[in-house]
Length: 142
Image 1: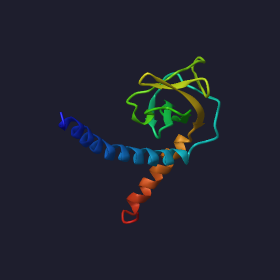
Image 2: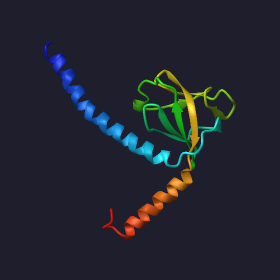
Image 3: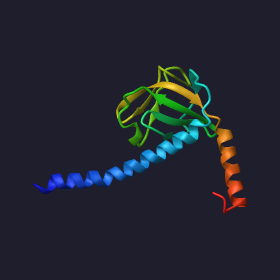
Image 4: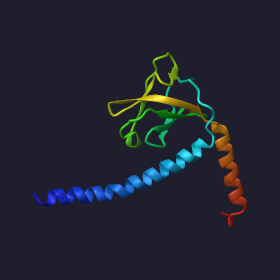
């Protein structure tokens, strides 16, 4: 029986570095998207959730179409959003997602949306493509 607490401590120690890497990656991705975040909007149209990426404890980027993305911030507390394996989005208004009325849903939790910021996603892709082209032309530059 003495070995069970020790196994729990070892498992926790092994899990902590993975979470730290995940938190660092999410912070990097959040900074990447925030550079292209526009003024907040009250709502956005969405027929279906195309793609999503958690970028913080209260932030998710959602794509309503292939090149249409939004940085969504939920109200605190939203427990373990950064560990969500799948999300859904409520839509109280037909084919729209509304700040303050709709929620990010995961693991039997509803985290109400506080703020929605459209992303200039095409500019993000264009800038990243240009940066890759510049790096390919001058591979020695970092």
